[in-house]
Image (spheres, rainbow, N blue to C red):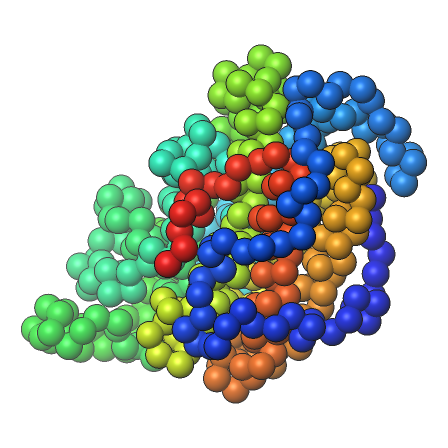
Length: 429
């Protein structure tokens, strides 16, 4: 069911007050008292009576069958669909950066930048669903860390990129591929395409500065090398995109089938409930990565930022697009919650909640998502500037996204009897 609601219907986002004095408020991982803790729990593998969803005229089974329907829908309509799209735009980025490298014109550079934006817009949808092969093995069942080979942020070393640029370790795919992930991927491409000052991000004591090798290159040579670096990095990203999509494709390694058959033949998920927990773990990206890392820390909301604000900690400091792609993250979360991007209708968390008699929680989650998306429009300017010049609206945005994340973290997990992800549990500093 899609809840249609306007921004004004649910009140202005400043209805959410900060938890504590800023900037050193407690992190949002801290335990909170929230309503709904006595809500009904779902016992996925024991409830098999089907329910007819009159709100959408879709037959939605409950229990394990219903959960598998949700896993299959989200996996196909959101995760795999976005990965397939990313292969296309990653290939286009390879072509565009090759043109920028060979032509060296302002027009070819601008085309490469636009191709990067096209690719990043799609990738930020994939970011929200780091399940199975995309996730890290320490946190994710079936994790292979493939996400970090494409966009390892916040693990980015701009100095490492500069050092590799001086040493020309971008000249072939094998050499750049041997560099740490912090010196390649989509953030490295952003840096190479959008950094226009000709300066580097290493300390004055670093060898490339102390021995004069960077200065000796000159601004034009730095620009030439950076477009070459961007091209080689784009080739690596496109190759990893194919590895990831093959891991999910039914015609490949078929992680989609592994997910959709949780508890019914899956070799990875012994029950539907375990599969659903894997999906909910991935969606905590909204809670940890978007609310905390992408907005909270740059805005100085958490103690991780030791000063009033930390604008250098934004995700995309060179393309001024951090807010643009945080919004895409929220949209992807919404689509995963609903089972598919609107207006497509598919089994989603909304259906599971209503099948458990928690229609009010579903309504509140959908309303909160609408408010969060509207709050992006309040912020004036790129995030790295707005954290200082439009701090009140950045705080409103942060709290609006956190409101969605907290409804998911506390109330939805309680109703559906899901566990917190390992990377969140006990992280209350």
